[in-house]
Length: 91
Image (tube, rainbow, N blue to C red; front, side, top):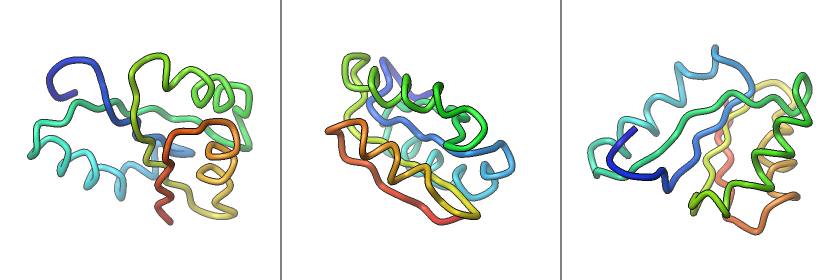
């Protein structure tokens, strides 16, 4: 979304988190910042989360916005895998 290759990765634990995370996407749209939205769960799909975090920088992502409810492990676990900045959003 946005123009060009995504610079921001918006990730969340489930599609129900999109209710909150769509606001981040809307702001990025307003500023013309290209982004992607992906569902990766620290609990249900940890391998997918590890893979996403490991490859984000080489794909051109510069920052990750991670939203999670409940135990909210997604932001911290993502930050432990990548050197990119990770912004945690409680959902």
